Length: 273
Image (cartoon, rainbow, N blue to C red; front, side, top):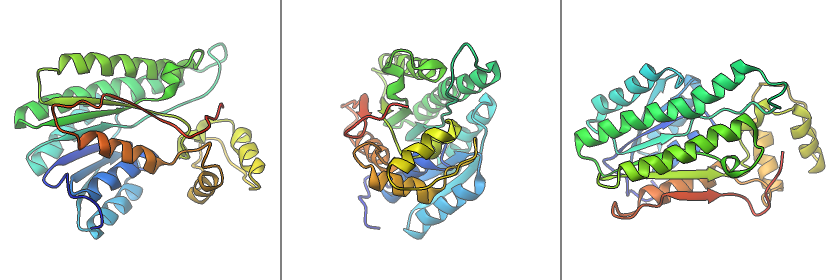
């Protein structure tokens, strides 16, 4: 299969696996032998990733899921355990950002960010703890935060990620006597569709500065070809989703008595949007 088989026999659940970082993490863990359950809203893209994992000799399942619904998150984890008999890795990756000022912001968008970035992560972590304890796993809960959680004046999105950082620290202390480790990964600027809710002019001007033309519609996915080209051209300023996936793989393959708790993964030069 061309990758280490250190995760053979383990089960991993990855939320937000339809694209970007989540998809890259699922492919990395699946390539390393784990049975990966990909969870997200866009079934077609997850099925493509699952087929790729299976084509490389791995195992994968797809679960359409709205992580804002706590019961759906619990059902997701319970389903993974029913299918495979265990849970070893839970990656709470699903995230959402609506940039903008608080003074002029829309409360429903704040609610969506809070429910996706914070409540879903809490529900996923709790369900994973119960499942890992029940099967006696030496498990890892991986939460994808952001360096925005450390930045001043980073808006509502940054506030949700500051909450994630606090949750991770609390969980680490709660689980010190369990065989469950907590990993908090804070990406910097990554070439993914996460920027689809940004002002299109920001992305278009960035692409133009690199000699590329781009016309984007707010809320629509940025074409993969454009993202790939931007990352190649601006590798010093944009990390790739695969960089985050490699960080996750490193953390979850350490001995259980070692906790790689916090990692900042960022490009050489940090973009400021």
